Image 1 (cartoon, rainbow, N blue to C red):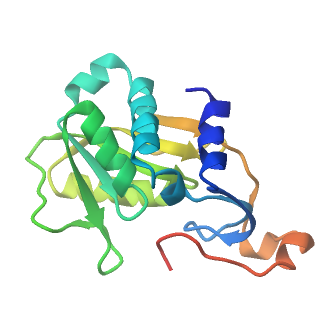
Image 2 (cartoon, rainbow, N blue to C red):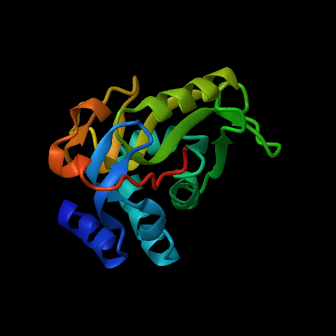
Amino acid sequence: MTDDEVLAEFRASHALLEGHFRLSSGRHSAWYLQCARVLMNADRAGRLARALVQKLPRDLRARIDVVVSPAMGGLIIGHEVGRTLERDAIFLERPEGTFELRRGFTIDPGARVLMVEDVVTTGLSSREAMKAVVAAGGEVLAEVALVDRSGGTVDLGVPFYPLVEINFPTYAPEELPPELAAKPVTKPGSRA
């Protein structure tokens, strides 16, 4: 899938939003990709998951034991990547602010994990999720994400395979351009 084809999927589902958004990272942007909208259609979610899996080197795909994704954003795409790889897909939650396995999910000692995210901007959530996987006994082999908003600069400590790289400018709260600061801010993500 080309970058243009991926963005066409976002546009077709009205998932590319324009306004003033506070991202999960705390940074601000005039653009937001609402992955929940692009993934609400099961056929589209399956196509995107298959395209993500195709980004992975074949030898890496063969080594994956389980797919893990952070809730909420990574849930649907993680499930679809698990389906594509024919592996179980489980997720992490933050009931008290720190990622943990719940709902009876466990990771076998030494299990080789593929992390799956919807959007990566700073990589903070991904690194926190990986820490929880390692604490549970797993080994993170790599991460895939629908979107890399870092402009290719994020370092997750493992190989990273985004479906598309988008470099929408983001700003720290004290660096907002006047035209963005003049717009009401919306927090569309899963973290308050």
